[in-house]
Image (tube, rainbow, N blue to C red; front, side):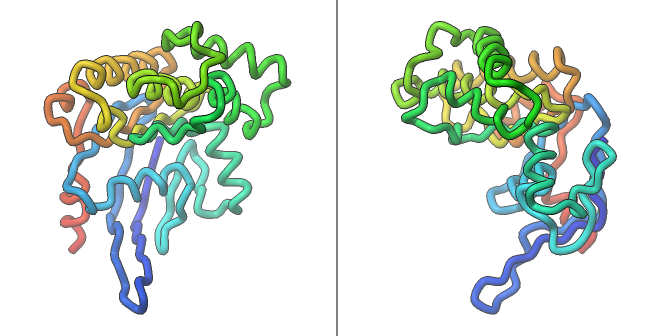
Length: 223
C-alpha cells in the first residue's frame, strides 16, 4: 500500500514560495497498476520523487510498504529505495561509459543483499529477461534508445522491488519501440506482483492500467 497524506511540497525561489505539489490524500493498493497524467509542471515527477524517498515533503506523510519514509534519515531512505523501489527514468539515467552489465549490477551494491557472485548472476538473469544478455559487455553509449530503456528496466527490477515507478518511460522512443517497452514493463510488474505507477502523456496507453489519475485534479480538490 502507498499512502500519501496532507502533502505539501514547496520551494523557495529567491524569496518566492513555489508550490510544487499539494494534495490531500493518495492511496494505491498493493499490485495496482496506475497511470498518472497531467500537464507539464503539475507535480507528477515531484510525486514520484516523494514516493521513492528522493525528496521529502515540506509537510505531510509518505507511507510505502507500511513505513513512513518521511521519518527516515537520508541514508535510511537510500537503503529503503534500493530494497523496495524500482525507478525507470525517461532519459534512462544510465552510466554511458559503463557496460550494460555494470549498469545493472550497480543498484545491487546498495541493497546489501547479495555477494559479488550473486550480483552478477542476478544481473545476467535480468538481462536475459529483457533480451539483452548478448550485449552484457557492450558500453551503454553504443546502444539504441530502446535498448537503453531495456537496460534501465533490468536495473530497476534487479532488486525485486515491491513498487515500480516509471516516469514517462516511452517519452524518448518512437511509437513502435514505446509500445514494446510499455508492454514489457506491464508484463514484468504482473510477474513480480509489483505495484506499478507510470507517468504518461500517451492517452492511448491509459486502457492498459487499472485506473488513471490526473494530478491536477488532486491539487484542485484541496484549493
